[in-house]
Amino acid sequence: MQIIAYTYTDPLIESPPDLEIWGWEIDRVYQDLGQRNELDRLLLDCVQIGYDYLLVRRLDELGDSVRDVQQVLARLQAMGIGLITTETEIEPQLNLLQLIDKIQSNQISRRMRQGHARNRLKSLPPPGKSPYGYRRGKDKYTIDRSAAPVVKDFFDRFLIYGSVRGAVRYLEKKYQKKIAASTGLRWLSNPVYRGDTSYLNGEVISDTHAAILSRDEAAQIDRLLRRNRRLPSRTASAPRSLAGLVTCRDCGQTLTVTSVSAPRRVEKYLYLRPTNCDRDPQCKSIQYDRVLNLAIDRICTDLPIAVNQMGMPNLDGFKAKLSQDIVDKQQVIAQLPELINSGVLDLETVELRTYKLKTEISELQTKLAAFPPVNLQSLAQAVSIPQFWLDLSESERRFYFREFIRTVEIDPQSANLDLKLRFIF
Image (cartoon, rainbow, N blue to C red; front, side, top):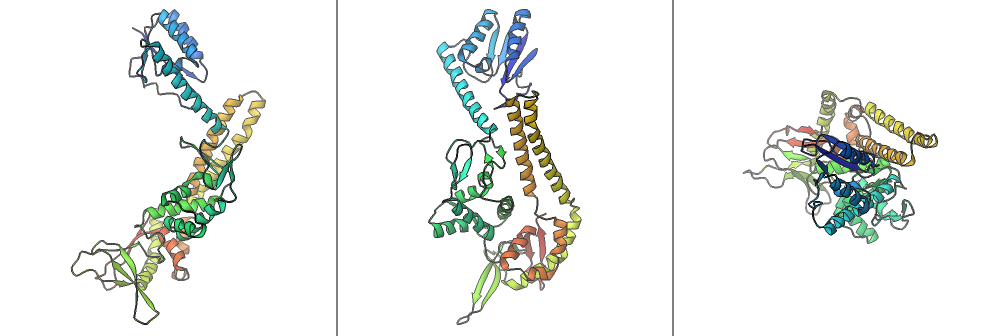
């Protein structure tokens, strides 16, 4: 008994299947990519060799229309070849109307996916409503001049304070634009605001329309979002630089910043105290400035040592390599039209290759944006001076602390607090 298999793949919407998908002892697999030359060869071999069974994933792979599929099925039936489908419950021996309905449904779905794929090749926006701040143009998103300033102000607010909920409240107060925090989070990570187009399959094409966010701003937003995930809730935009970072080594609790003032006095005093300490007696509060000064002294001493012990490679070299890869792929895209003029490639092949190169460029740009803006080794030397930290404002110090420090551990029972830093690397 001889068994063969046949697959048809449209390169616009799918990749060729693995040859091991059948789970049968297959004598030969016929594979078509875009055209159906192998199907014609299969039918010819069926006459000359006389196969017993043919495996296909779906019946609609046997033709571009119901009529084409029926003709192939008739030829197979006339030759006495059994047909087995692996991804559909409808067998050829069932009701003909059911068979036709299933084939038509699959082919309509395929044509819709092909239409979406052709739009992707031309970098056209996906179907659906355009994001807030944009309008749908003829072939790309265009900026909505009435809504874009609202979105830009939202991004600027987040870049300053690092709080999604704070930026959401700011929009409602200033513009009477009420959105949910989850919507604000989607805005911050939406590629559209960065000038890129994202599709349902997860692929992204860069620089398809005017951006509201610059690349540097987008990279900083991504860094802030990653950093905020490590922090306790409601400390992302806290005014004090140590908020959410200090933990007690005895009770394991995170210490919160508390402001205390004396009666009839303007002066306020800051303390760090555990919120849910279960020890008896409870761990005592500690002066905020004392912990801050100790943390600055410790980071100036420990950070250069920790960076050197990491043995980190030169990030500038990696960034230069990624940048050169992007330039190389852009040059390949620029050369593809010449291959059409010379007859080496057809338009469809060039469009598909251009699309793949653009998605690869987007992936490289994402990797490039994930790198720190400066080399960590050189930055560690620059920030190892105590005066650098003392000259910063609390918001600036908060930014740098959270770039390096995961937690600040202290022992409130120790005379010198025995402060230790846990770096994020």
